[in-house]
Amino acid sequence: MRFADRMNRLKTESAFVVLAKAKELERQGRDIIHLEIGDADFNTPSLIADEAYAQMKAGQTHYCPSAGLLELREACCAFLRREGRGEYKPSEIVVGPGGKPFLYYVIMAFAGEGDEVIYPDPGFPVYESVTLYAGAGAVPLPILEEKGFSFTAEDLRSRVTGRTRLLILNYPHNPTGGTLARKDLEAIAKIAIERDLVVLSDEVYAHMLFEGEHVSIGTLPGMRERTILLESFSKTYAMTGWRLGFVACPEPIAQKLTQLVTNSVSCVAPFMQLAGAKALLADQSESRAMMEDYRRRRDLFIAGLNEIGGLSCKSPAGAFYAFPNVGGVPMSAEKFADYLLEEVGVATLPGSAFGAHAGKHIRMCFANSVENLERAVDRIAGAVARLRK
Ligand SMILES: Cc1ncc(COP(=O)(O)O)c(C=O)c1O
Image (cartoon, rainbow, N blue to C red; front, top):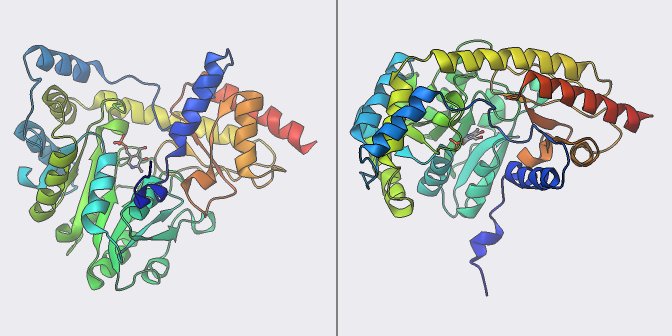
């Protein structure tokens, strides 16, 4: 058997690998605290689940247009307008099974052999993996702790070449929790316009912003026609397992992405789409309460981590990850992540799972109960104390 060459270039998302390992340890009777995957301990608000169930019973269980039901695409437009994130028409919205498939579709649509994609490093691993799979050059843009988990316009400018097709931004940022302020976005927009770049703006954590305001780059002058805004229901509405997301972008791009939906998954289940419309249009108080709760958990968890000698953790401006520097622990971050899982039952991810520029960090998702977060801090503190003895 011989696989296509491109399969050798495809990487993985370690969160799912560690999740499988941690679940196996659990099955063997170990008590594991799961901080490895970006998922909430909240369930989807019941008004959304009830809507899906009602629509399923009402027969919304057939194929539907690949771009998505008009009801949901109209709701996406209303949602983005309400949040000041741009004026879009339903023909500029494409619905898909989660946000992730659009990373694949957009990279496949814009980058091929001889092209280059610039993406944040550390960053969501799929950016690099799919870029390489597409046969394009992967150009990491370092997101460094010493730069406040951000980058300068010069950092970006020096990486743009005549072959750059796509710039991927992610803010608030997984895994560092950094974000981009309006002035940063203006500097990025200037470069994107000058160098005629398409920007994939991954804004799936837009609602998890604890400091400052979220500005969608597509709202800046000259950016709408070159921006693909990515949103997802996963994080904002605790709907990770549903698999529902969408993009807002100019119509010619929407048409190409729709073609990719048709060629891969056909469409998203219509009962889910109608529940998604409900999520966007109904009372947002449950989602807001979850986001407020994440802030409390962040404060508690980061304070706890910073009391452990050998660890230092900046408070993330957004998203739900702690990304401490573990340079003071006498082993590599990779070995330390293994040690935490195997010796004290805390599942985390090493920074290297997100690229080459975060080798001294580990990532932990704090969307967990206060009790578990406190237990995790105690266990990590005990582990570090033993290692540093
Ligand atoms: C930065 C980023 N983008 C996109 C996604 C994809 O989310 P989903 O496919 O669940 O919508 C994630 C999930 O963790 C993420 O962290």
